[in-house]
Image (cartoon, rainbow, N blue to C red; front, side):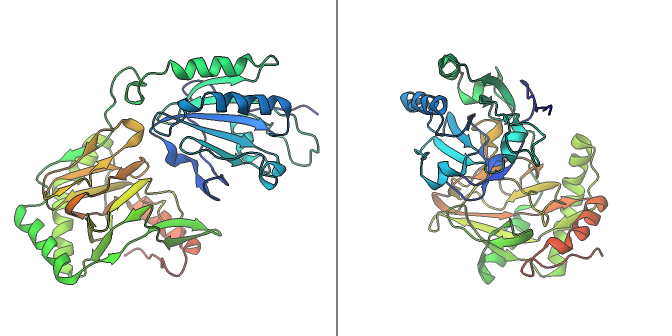
Length: 374
């Protein structure tokens, strides 16, 4: 039987996946952007070649710190997990358990044709990704072990993370002052303070359904949902006049719909933050096209929005100012260390996305609720 393999080359986007990991039983690989990534496809840690490879990783432990470089070994041998042959060493060193070979197929370590095949050829290889999760280099294992030396020399010579492209990168975001007037900002803050907020979570796929979950290690924020139709209409009018034309100009996308009318509050007393994530990775959120983050006040420290794939720069708009960005971008909110950050946080999309949102109703849990187009 003939086999064919995926062959990834420099500049190709790295395939995204979710898989069990030593750190998380359902690790979302797309969230690791913002640092160099080393994927090492071992086959099985019981193999002497793989053991020598892991020894080399341990000998260069100082390279893997999760700030500049992270290492992920990928094993397709279930015994590696069951018998504890591989162990994470944080920060920087983790392992994926690729039983079934789904991840290995994506990256060309095992062939595309594996169904019904009892003996599958394995290509052991290293793959290095840049901070935007694009392929930088692929290095096959060598019989004499020279591949590990080649890799470690390559990693040691890499530039600082924010210089990987040769120049500092600017995240592809819109930064727009004067979206909300000062009086309107104070009005929204007053609504929150008068009514209080509820702990907010985030969406996750569980058992084929989109469910709302909370995890204070991942996100800590309290939200107030605006119900006054006059205030909702006032927010819509301002965004339609002051943000929608900019999205059309820059992205040639015509917004027709808006979702979620909330005032969110990140507080220092709660350690308010939101770790790196994307806003459209579940069936219940796939329709979202652009996120809008409008600061309502300035009296806080921390709480800045950043885009790790494009460098360490973070953004803090002035009161009434907005950061607008594609929901596909990896982004995070740093921990508030002093005061409270109040923000208005909607999503916008178009009629085609509204149809997708309705189409995905069967995949929503009862806690999320169905959507019907008006």
